[in-house]
Image (cartoon, rainbow, N blue to C red; front, side, top):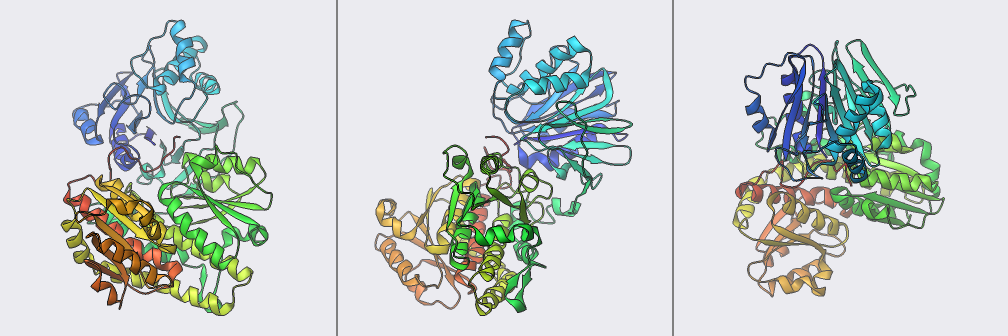
Length: 610
């Protein structure tokens, strides 16, 4: 969950590394550090806090070499402070390393190294790996071999970049379970944990596979396994622009990404939705179409916001494709010995395509002979490469830690899959056209919600001092309630819970008083009368009711304190519209409270460690 960048080339190294760290800061922002060459030796400067704190320390530093590495941290082992910040050095000072992941056997490695006379300055597992490389290098006098032999002893996950003062024009990067990519420029190379640190300099990148390393020097690069077998890698082209990594006039990335959803939802179905036929074209699933059609059960696995989109997908797939669906937290799936059948299909959902628990769930399923599919945003990501087939959501880079546009794009793709499968089975062309036409209208309907931003902001301001929120919905809108509560918790640190509205009477109703805001997703559908009854129960206990309702519904105004209207659509597509006001409420409350919206405390964008 940390940001790594390494550079070898003719540019001023510190400038490249700092720019990369700023692009990667959404991956971790507890501390930051940099190692570069000065008078033939490696100099390391690191500091707790944001990258800007590190940048202050680098003013006036004269980097004389062409090689360096840098890191922005989300702490796992050891508290975030100057000492535990990366890069780490070995005892001799010749080796400098940055690391993302968890070295599970670091305690036993540390004991062995301590017995051999090596000492440690930090509480981190990463320093243990650095010292191990240094110890092997001391014995072998071969930098590349030292890295390979050290990694062969490691249990756990890693994405690393490492340099040696005896090799001032050599950069080594490696991965196992934690993403690493390197860019190939004009006589320059950039290794990073995310392509966003690379795009300013080149669009040509190579994604490392698990247990693979790259050795880069001024004459080129060579990829090989940790066992020293040469490998061949395809060079990919980054498909987004640098402008997509900028705020574009918005105060925060989160707000920018909320306001991109009219475009990103359209991009998710562009070229795939066949409106006149009431059908869908999904080239990424064509090879597994028959397996999906014959599937006895679909298991969707995900974490966080992606898990909420999976719940919506469950309802869609069961309704349109008539296939039993189970939704599993990936973190639980991997450990609970699930009962799987050879005719089951696993669908893994992840914005980054690097979520550690979701990758482990895929591994568990595939080891048992189950076909695994991916729904991801990042092209070339681990899940995209480790699954048999899948669908990209095409949402573009999502920098805000609290996911917004990825959620609505994931639901859009799940709707496409449900429609596609339904048409392969029993769904009529008439029903298919109705759904396809409704999907086509979504971008324009989202734009109508944006017109209510001042109204939504006023509601957010009114309730920004509340310390608890309750979010309630039924059917397709229950996952929306969960997502709305999660967004508020993530960025404003206000306690919020999402529940099925009917479950309120089984406990949460005890919390309701005249200080409790209760957000209802109360759109017109077949259970609208039921949700009205739930609203009346809250009203009788003097709770403050904020309703997300369908345009034209005047009855809701008689029972709610505030009503935010969204355009009418099919119930299965309502979550795409209903969640946007909830994203905006969370955003404006967080801004009102002075929170760091894009980088909320204790969170990182991509959870690449267990």
